[in-house]
Image (tube, rainbow, N blue to C red; front, side, top):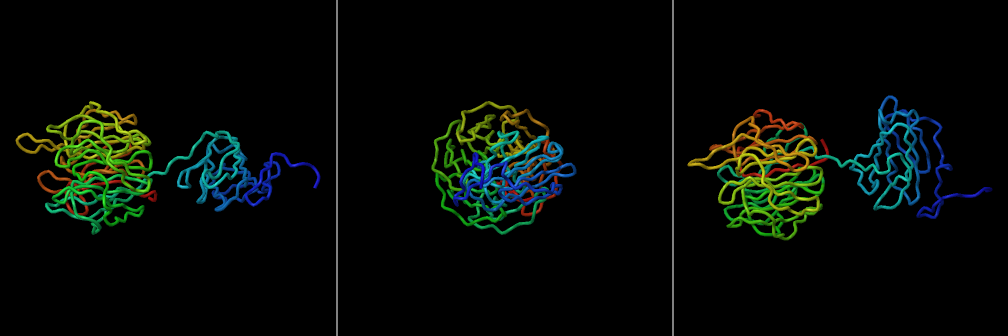
Length: 423
């Protein structure tokens, strides 16, 4: 062989990988909606009529290289979508959505290792990162009908609540729940008459697991939320007295020891995610009803109290909506008798809580709430002197819909969380 090799690298097998100029370019322009790519090849991708999803090889060696070019300068109309087929792409798992949508763009990727996977060595937007997938389904579980129950109700990606599923784990109420691991959930703590410290993991298909002996102070009337994209946090509650502490949950569902909290010790509060990777705890009860929130960073650090607007109340619910915003809703106070509210407070993507919005639907307390369908939310169950089985859907712009007759056992004091990337 004459000539010289320039800027070539060795694969793990010792075989020299081709440079872009030495790639075997496909002579056929790709116009279809799918392509299964092969290492060592270049492809002209024409997206004039449709987007093209490219499935990368399911196995690769260091130095494997593939190049894609925008044949008709139409990627800004219909994008090139990368399915990394079980391998990482720029360090993100293949559950992330990776697309390229710049007209005239070309993409040259090389496989590095199992940690970072495929890396762009040249493209028009190397700084682009994958978009994390969104959860599609929700689950409500546990609670009290007057007696503690161990049942769950799944919610599909359209917000439809399914019939009771006989639960696994200790029947209890005043429990809380959060998402973890991106597509799973965890229920934790609560009371059986005595406060408990135990958790139940929920798979990405909505199956509730048996009890796991908990870590941290046994307590009830706490709140929980997802933070950091794939982790959870339980915080506050009552262990015989109000507490200000938190327990972080790893991306694999392991609950950590108590962390002395920041902010006012209280119970009957609510929590949810906001932004893309943070959380907020809000409202609650000390020896009176309070209007405070505590923001949680994407590393799980709880901030000091922030005074917020809206009706001071307790036993409300909260969920994320719109991809990066949140909503608090419903709740109660006491003034010679229970006072039930049908109000909501929207939270922007900076964690700022807005003033009351007159609610739609039955005023109640002790409901649960969770996100579903990627960008919407649902409030369900609760009581207003009687146990309720109803729900209210929340649009991706934060508008609460009227009551939908519920499916499943009427109850309150339950937990709720989102799960599953699959619609």
